[in-house]
Image 1 (cartoon, rainbow, N blue to C red):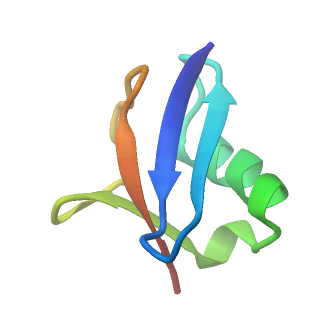
Image 2: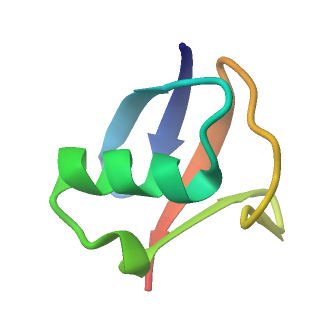
Length: 67
């Protein structure tokens, strides 16, 4: 299990625990269940790169945006 920190810069910082072999889509589904927003409306990125099929590691901090 790895833990990823997602911050939406509006006051919500969510820690999500997923398996190390889970995809970004699985991470979005778990995140949407925790914050109550549909997974299709979530965009995860770090700096200027949008995470679609990237590898994530334990302790990564991602920016959370709502489309």
